[in-house]
Length: 534
Image (cartoon, rainbow, N blue to C red; front, side, top):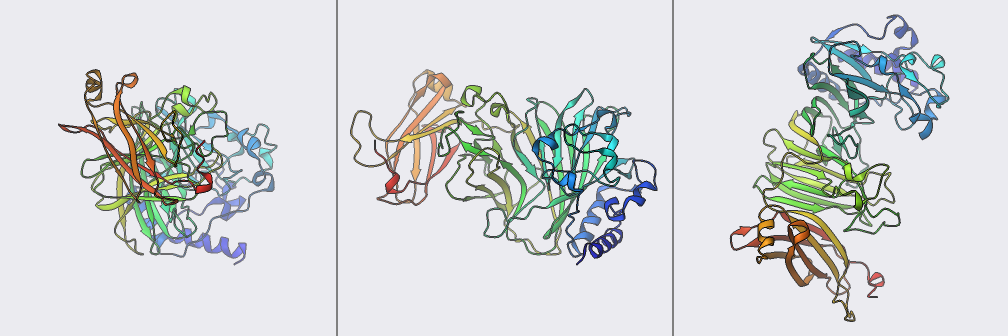
């Protein structure tokens, strides 16, 4: 198919589904004919958006890549970062609202235009690109020479009282990020994950259009709608975003698969873990720890709290935690001590946790965790999401509602003690020659009743289970008064020369019952050649 044929067919497809044809597909004259930055009005609501998504899914998928001007497509990191949006051109800048919306320019990794609309009183109007919206800084771009129909890459949201620091941003594929009171971006969320961690190439659906609803004068919430598309699925999304100490996103989505999907990921969280106190495989950097998050937390339908520390494995690692009606899950940055990171540039100690809370029963399925090897902090290598047990078939409608919470502390936390640190190193008895290989674990728990028990030096029992033929030895649990909690220490010993993954499960109890959440760990013993006994 030639580019001319593609544009012709794509324009016909958009028209058939009631979607205004993007200006890039019509050419400069269509944009110039309006003489303003807003297109003609059209009726819009969430029901209509779901209808559009369904109709889109019933048609053949059409890729939306558009050839950008060479000067834009060749922008490097520094050039792209120098481009700034003029705040006086922000959406709602002249309206009586508490919020502003500003737009991202195309370039660098973001080379596919995304259509933007303003929604007021049920009427949507497309927001057209205008070079005057941007200060091109050191990019080398000349606004007057750029196409008048260039388009946008994404958008960000600001409080009117703080127009420089955004609290949420939607940019690239279906990625979006947000911050709590700390104001520090970290991990991302996505609209949808498809075939993540499978033998297939992962598919990254795109949000191809957004509708930003003008907030009323006293509203603390911004509502955003998005249309998602990919070779496998189309979807409609509604976001109600309320910034605060912990930022909340209330999300509804309707998905319309074009074909069966092997692994679909609902509410995917995407993060980075390079090195930390429990995994120093990539520890050549001067900073002690480098990660956006340090663990996956889960609150099961049965009420159990589970903590799974993250790792940077030598090979891709996939975990599935089966559940029925999960109450919540998320990637958390529990360690918020600056001294543990020593990073005064990107402040890993301030990175937000991201907690997913289903709004209604999700039924049977699993929280799935994918850990991918990474060499440095520039690559996201951690993904967690919900995978429904029911197979995904073409032509059906999948409805999901959930809330995302971004901030230092999720709204749901264990009432029992929780894990605050996991440290590992070579096992064995100090002062004695090692005759075989073992790996030491030191797991710290705090919260719940542990402070009172630690003050009395009460006996607390660790309940340990280890799989794959491994064994544990030198097990202890003793008060750690510095954290008003307890430290469990043990050595894990692999069977013979095996490098098979070993699953370890731990929690604390006393005569009255469980005292802590459940700590899960997956340890892969090194090869015999790497088992240095020193």
